[in-house]
Image (cartoon, rainbow, N blue to C red; front, side, top):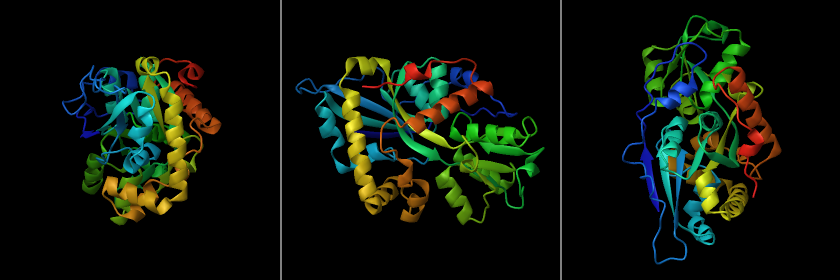
Length: 342
Protein backbone atom coordinates (compact mmCIF):
# COMPACT_ATOMS: atom_id res chain seq x y z
CA UNK A 1 0.00 0.00 0.00
CA UNK A 2 1.29 3.45 -0.90
CA UNK A 3 0.06 6.73 0.55
CA UNK A 4 1.47 9.96 -0.84
CA UNK A 5 0.22 13.53 -0.51
CA UNK A 6 1.13 15.94 -3.27
CA UNK A 7 0.66 19.70 -3.01
CA UNK A 8 0.41 21.06 -6.52
CA UNK A 9 2.10 24.35 -7.24
CA UNK A 10 0.69 24.69 -10.74
CA UNK A 11 -2.13 27.06 -9.97
CA UNK A 12 -0.84 30.45 -8.89
CA UNK A 13 -3.05 32.33 -11.32
CA UNK A 14 -5.04 35.23 -9.90
CA UNK A 15 -8.42 35.54 -11.58
CA UNK A 16 -10.44 38.75 -11.76
CA UNK A 17 -14.10 38.82 -12.74
CA UNK A 18 -16.86 36.36 -12.06
CA UNK A 19 -16.23 34.03 -15.04
CA UNK A 20 -12.85 32.32 -15.41
CA UNK A 21 -11.77 30.18 -18.33
CA UNK A 22 -11.24 26.69 -16.97
CA UNK A 23 -10.07 25.49 -20.37
CA UNK A 24 -7.14 27.92 -20.18
CA UNK A 25 -6.46 26.86 -16.61
CA UNK A 26 -6.35 23.17 -17.47
CA UNK A 27 -4.24 23.76 -20.56
CA UNK A 28 -1.66 25.67 -18.51
CA UNK A 29 -1.19 22.91 -15.92
CA UNK A 30 2.25 21.46 -15.44
CA UNK A 31 2.90 17.75 -14.93
CA UNK A 32 2.66 16.30 -11.42
CA UNK A 33 5.80 16.45 -9.29
CA UNK A 34 7.89 13.48 -8.28
CA UNK A 35 5.50 12.51 -5.50
CA UNK A 36 2.99 11.37 -8.11
CA UNK A 37 3.23 7.84 -9.56
CA UNK A 38 5.07 7.48 -12.82
CA UNK A 39 3.05 6.81 -15.97
CA UNK A 40 3.13 3.17 -16.96
CA UNK A 41 3.64 1.94 -13.39
CA UNK A 42 0.38 -0.01 -13.47
CA UNK A 43 1.97 -3.42 -12.97
CA UNK A 44 2.12 -5.57 -9.86
CA UNK A 45 4.18 -8.54 -8.73
CA UNK A 46 4.71 -11.20 -11.38
CA UNK A 47 4.36 -14.07 -8.91
CA UNK A 48 0.75 -13.24 -8.02
CA UNK A 49 -2.44 -14.14 -9.84
CA UNK A 50 -3.51 -10.54 -9.13
CA UNK A 51 -1.05 -8.33 -10.99
CA UNK A 52 -2.65 -4.90 -11.51
CA UNK A 53 -1.78 -1.95 -9.29
CA UNK A 54 -4.72 0.44 -8.87
CA UNK A 55 -3.57 4.05 -8.58
CA UNK A 56 -6.11 6.43 -7.01
CA UNK A 57 -5.77 10.20 -7.09
CA UNK A 58 -7.95 12.15 -4.66
CA UNK A 59 -8.37 15.68 -3.37
CA UNK A 60 -6.53 16.15 -0.10
CA UNK A 61 -6.73 19.87 0.63
CA UNK A 62 -5.82 19.35 4.29
CA UNK A 63 -3.05 16.86 3.65
CA UNK A 64 -4.90 13.65 4.51
CA UNK A 65 -3.26 10.38 3.46
CA UNK A 66 -6.54 8.61 2.61
CA UNK A 67 -9.78 9.78 0.99
CA UNK A 68 -12.50 10.49 3.51
CA UNK A 69 -15.55 8.29 2.94
CA UNK A 70 -16.37 4.63 2.32
CA UNK A 71 -13.22 3.78 0.32
CA UNK A 72 -10.91 5.29 2.91
CA UNK A 73 -12.86 3.45 5.60
CA UNK A 74 -12.57 0.14 3.72
CA UNK A 75 -8.81 0.62 3.43
CA UNK A 76 -8.49 1.47 7.13
CA UNK A 77 -10.55 -1.60 8.05
CA UNK A 78 -8.20 -3.77 6.01
CA UNK A 79 -10.50 -5.32 3.42
CA UNK A 80 -10.16 -3.03 0.39
CA UNK A 81 -7.09 -4.84 -0.96
CA UNK A 82 -8.42 -8.29 -0.12
CA UNK A 83 -11.68 -7.68 -1.95
CA UNK A 84 -10.00 -6.19 -5.01
CA UNK A 85 -7.65 -9.15 -5.36
CA UNK A 86 -10.71 -11.13 -6.45
CA UNK A 87 -10.78 -9.05 -9.65
CA UNK A 88 -7.04 -9.01 -10.33
CA UNK A 89 -5.95 -5.95 -8.31
CA UNK A 90 -2.70 -6.77 -6.50
CA UNK A 91 -2.30 -3.47 -4.65
CA UNK A 92 -3.83 -0.02 -4.23
CA UNK A 93 -1.84 3.20 -4.18
CA UNK A 94 -3.33 6.48 -2.95
CA UNK A 95 -2.04 9.85 -4.12
CA UNK A 96 -3.42 13.03 -2.56
CA UNK A 97 -3.57 16.38 -4.37
CA UNK A 98 -4.33 19.80 -2.98
CA UNK A 99 -7.15 20.47 -5.46
CA UNK A 100 -9.37 18.97 -8.12
CA UNK A 101 -7.37 20.47 -11.00
CA UNK A 102 -4.30 18.75 -9.54
CA UNK A 103 -6.09 15.40 -9.76
CA UNK A 104 -6.97 16.20 -13.39
CA UNK A 105 -3.29 16.78 -14.13
CA UNK A 106 -2.46 13.29 -12.90
CA UNK A 107 -5.21 11.73 -15.01
CA UNK A 108 -4.00 13.60 -18.09
CA UNK A 109 -0.43 12.44 -17.43
CA UNK A 110 -1.54 8.81 -17.14
CA UNK A 111 -0.32 8.72 -13.55
CA UNK A 112 -3.55 7.55 -11.89
CA UNK A 113 -6.32 5.16 -12.91
CA UNK A 114 -9.13 6.48 -10.73
CA UNK A 115 -9.85 10.06 -9.73
CA UNK A 116 -11.91 10.93 -6.65
CA UNK A 117 -12.71 14.52 -7.39
CA UNK A 118 -15.17 17.35 -6.93
CA UNK A 119 -17.97 17.60 -9.48
CA UNK A 120 -16.78 20.87 -11.01
CA UNK A 121 -13.17 19.86 -11.75
CA UNK A 122 -14.32 16.39 -12.85
CA UNK A 123 -16.72 17.85 -15.42
CA UNK A 124 -14.17 20.44 -16.53
CA UNK A 125 -11.57 17.72 -17.01
CA UNK A 126 -13.96 15.56 -19.04
CA UNK A 127 -14.94 18.56 -21.17
CA UNK A 128 -11.29 19.24 -21.87
CA UNK A 129 -10.61 15.77 -23.15
CA UNK A 130 -9.93 13.46 -20.21
CA UNK A 131 -10.91 9.93 -21.28
CA UNK A 132 -12.83 8.97 -18.15
CA UNK A 133 -16.10 7.34 -17.17
CA UNK A 134 -18.14 8.17 -14.08
CA UNK A 135 -18.39 5.02 -11.92
CA UNK A 136 -19.93 6.31 -8.68
CA UNK A 137 -20.90 9.35 -6.63
CA UNK A 138 -18.91 9.51 -3.40
CA UNK A 139 -20.63 12.31 -1.53
CA UNK A 140 -23.56 14.66 -2.04
CA UNK A 141 -24.59 18.05 -0.60
CA UNK A 142 -21.03 19.28 -0.01
CA UNK A 143 -21.36 22.68 1.60
CA UNK A 144 -19.33 25.84 1.02
CA UNK A 145 -19.26 28.70 3.52
CA UNK A 146 -18.78 32.38 2.70
CA UNK A 147 -16.64 33.90 5.45
CA UNK A 148 -15.98 37.67 5.43
CA UNK A 149 -12.98 39.34 7.02
CA UNK A 150 -13.51 40.64 10.54
CA UNK A 151 -15.39 43.91 10.39
CA UNK A 152 -16.13 43.21 6.73
CA UNK A 153 -19.33 42.63 4.73
CA UNK A 154 -22.46 41.67 6.62
CA UNK A 155 -24.52 40.69 3.58
CA UNK A 156 -23.95 39.48 0.03
CA UNK A 157 -24.90 42.93 -1.28
CA UNK A 158 -22.06 44.45 0.76
CA UNK A 159 -19.57 42.59 -1.45
CA UNK A 160 -20.20 44.93 -4.42
CA UNK A 161 -16.90 46.50 -5.41
CA UNK A 162 -14.98 44.10 -3.18
CA UNK A 163 -13.23 40.77 -3.56
CA UNK A 164 -13.80 37.09 -2.81
CA UNK A 165 -11.04 34.55 -2.49
CA UNK A 166 -11.74 31.05 -3.80
CA UNK A 167 -9.89 28.00 -5.07
CA UNK A 168 -10.45 28.37 -8.80
CA UNK A 169 -11.42 25.14 -10.49
CA UNK A 170 -12.86 23.52 -7.37
CA UNK A 171 -16.40 23.17 -5.99
CA UNK A 172 -16.35 26.56 -4.16
CA UNK A 173 -15.71 28.39 -7.43
CA UNK A 174 -19.02 27.26 -8.93
CA UNK A 175 -20.75 28.30 -5.71
CA UNK A 176 -19.22 31.80 -5.88
CA UNK A 177 -20.12 32.27 -9.55
CA UNK A 178 -23.69 31.14 -8.92
CA UNK A 179 -24.01 33.23 -5.78
CA UNK A 180 -22.88 36.40 -7.53
CA UNK A 181 -25.20 35.74 -10.47
CA UNK A 182 -28.18 35.21 -8.16
CA UNK A 183 -27.37 38.44 -6.33
CA UNK A 184 -26.93 40.49 -9.52
CA UNK A 185 -23.25 41.02 -8.74
CA UNK A 186 -21.64 39.31 -11.73
CA UNK A 187 -18.69 41.47 -12.81
CA UNK A 188 -19.01 43.63 -9.70
CA UNK A 189 -16.90 41.50 -7.36
CA UNK A 190 -13.28 40.55 -8.00
CA UNK A 191 -12.48 36.84 -7.69
CA UNK A 192 -9.00 35.99 -6.42
CA UNK A 193 -7.58 32.47 -6.80
CA UNK A 194 -6.33 31.38 -3.37
CA UNK A 195 -5.76 28.04 -1.69
CA UNK A 196 -7.27 27.47 1.74
CA UNK A 197 -4.08 28.45 3.55
CA UNK A 198 -3.62 31.51 1.36
CA UNK A 199 -7.25 32.49 1.84
CA UNK A 200 -7.00 32.18 5.61
CA UNK A 201 -3.93 34.41 5.65
CA UNK A 202 -5.50 36.93 3.28
CA UNK A 203 -8.59 37.20 5.50
CA UNK A 204 -6.41 37.80 8.55
CA UNK A 205 -4.55 40.59 6.75
CA UNK A 206 -7.76 42.06 5.34
CA UNK A 207 -6.49 41.66 1.77
CA UNK A 208 -9.81 40.17 0.60
CA UNK A 209 -13.35 40.90 1.73
CA UNK A 210 -14.44 37.25 2.00
CA UNK A 211 -13.31 33.70 1.32
CA UNK A 212 -15.38 30.75 0.06
CA UNK A 213 -14.28 28.06 2.50
CA UNK A 214 -14.88 24.35 2.61
CA UNK A 215 -16.03 22.78 5.88
CA UNK A 216 -12.75 22.21 7.73
CA UNK A 217 -11.50 25.73 7.13
CA UNK A 218 -14.91 27.25 7.89
CA UNK A 219 -14.98 25.43 11.21
CA UNK A 220 -11.52 26.70 12.09
CA UNK A 221 -12.32 30.28 11.07
CA UNK A 222 -15.51 30.32 13.13
CA UNK A 223 -13.52 29.17 16.15
CA UNK A 224 -11.32 32.25 15.58
CA UNK A 225 -14.29 34.61 15.69
CA UNK A 226 -15.13 34.87 11.99
CA UNK A 227 -18.75 34.81 10.85
CA UNK A 228 -20.44 32.91 8.03
CA UNK A 229 -22.81 35.06 5.98
CA UNK A 230 -23.91 32.48 3.41
CA UNK A 231 -23.76 28.76 2.62
CA UNK A 232 -24.07 26.80 -0.62
CA UNK A 233 -26.87 24.66 0.83
CA UNK A 234 -28.99 27.81 1.16
CA UNK A 235 -29.34 27.84 -2.64
CA UNK A 236 -30.71 25.38 -5.17
CA UNK A 237 -28.00 23.51 -7.09
CA UNK A 238 -25.00 25.30 -5.55
CA UNK A 239 -23.94 22.59 -3.09
CA UNK A 240 -21.34 20.23 -4.50
CA UNK A 241 -20.66 16.54 -4.82
CA UNK A 242 -17.60 14.33 -5.09
CA UNK A 243 -17.39 11.59 -7.70
CA UNK A 244 -15.12 8.76 -8.80
CA UNK A 245 -14.16 8.49 -12.45
CA UNK A 246 -12.04 5.73 -13.97
CA UNK A 247 -9.95 6.01 -17.10
CA UNK A 248 -11.34 4.23 -20.14
CA UNK A 249 -8.06 2.31 -20.48
CA UNK A 250 -8.33 0.94 -16.94
CA UNK A 251 -11.96 -0.11 -17.40
CA UNK A 252 -11.16 -1.87 -20.66
CA UNK A 253 -8.32 -3.77 -19.01
CA UNK A 254 -10.37 -4.59 -15.88
CA UNK A 255 -13.98 -5.32 -16.91
CA UNK A 256 -14.93 -6.90 -13.55
CA UNK A 257 -13.65 -4.01 -11.47
CA UNK A 258 -16.66 -1.69 -11.19
CA UNK A 259 -19.08 -4.30 -9.89
CA UNK A 260 -16.62 -5.24 -7.13
CA UNK A 261 -15.95 -1.55 -6.41
CA UNK A 262 -19.67 -0.98 -5.91
CA UNK A 263 -19.87 -3.97 -3.55
CA UNK A 264 -17.05 -2.55 -1.42
CA UNK A 265 -18.68 0.88 -1.26
CA UNK A 266 -22.03 -0.64 -0.24
CA UNK A 267 -20.42 -2.67 2.55
CA UNK A 268 -18.39 0.29 3.82
CA UNK A 269 -21.39 2.64 3.73
CA UNK A 270 -23.46 0.20 5.80
CA UNK A 271 -20.65 -0.02 8.35
CA UNK A 272 -20.27 3.76 8.53
CA UNK A 273 -23.98 4.20 9.14
CA UNK A 274 -23.96 1.49 11.82
CA UNK A 275 -20.82 2.80 13.55
CA UNK A 276 -20.86 6.61 13.30
CA UNK A 277 -18.65 7.14 16.36
CA UNK A 278 -15.98 4.81 14.97
CA UNK A 279 -16.23 6.48 11.60
CA UNK A 280 -15.79 9.99 12.98
CA UNK A 281 -12.78 8.77 14.93
CA UNK A 282 -11.34 7.43 11.66
CA UNK A 283 -11.86 10.84 10.01
CA UNK A 284 -10.21 12.51 12.99
CA UNK A 285 -7.20 10.20 12.81
CA UNK A 286 -6.76 10.74 9.07
CA UNK A 287 -7.23 14.52 9.17
CA UNK A 288 -5.54 14.97 12.57
CA UNK A 289 -8.44 16.93 14.00
CA UNK A 290 -10.87 16.67 16.95
CA UNK A 291 -13.93 14.44 16.60
CA UNK A 292 -16.38 17.33 16.78
CA UNK A 293 -14.68 18.86 13.75
CA UNK A 294 -15.04 15.57 11.87
CA UNK A 295 -18.76 15.46 12.64
CA UNK A 296 -19.06 18.92 11.09
CA UNK A 297 -16.87 18.31 8.04
CA UNK A 298 -17.84 14.74 7.13
CA UNK A 299 -21.44 13.99 8.15
CA UNK A 300 -22.46 10.44 7.29
CA UNK A 301 -25.62 11.83 5.66
CA UNK A 302 -23.42 12.85 2.70
CA UNK A 303 -22.76 9.25 1.66
CA UNK A 304 -25.43 7.90 -0.71
CA UNK A 305 -26.75 4.39 -0.16
CA UNK A 306 -26.30 3.45 -3.82
CA UNK A 307 -23.39 4.13 -6.18
CA UNK A 308 -25.27 6.17 -8.78
CA UNK A 309 -28.37 7.68 -7.11
CA UNK A 310 -30.80 9.30 -9.53
CA UNK A 311 -30.89 12.56 -7.55
CA UNK A 312 -27.11 12.75 -7.53
CA UNK A 313 -26.92 12.17 -11.28
CA UNK A 314 -29.52 14.87 -11.88
CA UNK A 315 -27.54 17.34 -9.76
CA UNK A 316 -24.42 16.51 -11.78
CA UNK A 317 -26.31 17.16 -15.01
CA UNK A 318 -27.43 20.51 -13.65
CA UNK A 319 -23.85 21.30 -12.68
CA UNK A 320 -22.73 20.55 -16.23
CA UNK A 321 -25.43 22.78 -17.69
CA UNK A 322 -24.54 25.54 -15.23
CA UNK A 323 -20.88 25.45 -16.28
CA UNK A 324 -21.90 25.59 -19.93
CA UNK A 325 -24.43 28.39 -19.49
CA UNK A 326 -21.90 30.48 -17.58
CA UNK A 327 -19.28 29.81 -20.28
CA UNK A 328 -16.99 28.33 -17.65
CA UNK A 329 -16.62 25.44 -20.08
CA UNK A 330 -16.88 26.01 -23.80
CA UNK A 331 -18.13 22.67 -25.05
CA UNK A 332 -20.48 19.84 -24.14
CA UNK A 333 -20.22 16.07 -23.79
CA UNK A 334 -22.87 13.38 -23.54
CA UNK A 335 -23.54 13.03 -19.84
CA UNK A 336 -25.38 9.73 -20.22
CA UNK A 337 -22.46 8.23 -22.16
CA UNK A 338 -20.07 9.39 -19.42
CA UNK A 339 -21.92 7.30 -16.82
CA UNK A 340 -20.57 3.74 -16.64
CA UNK A 341 -23.01 1.07 -15.58
CA UNK A 342 -21.64 -2.46 -15.04
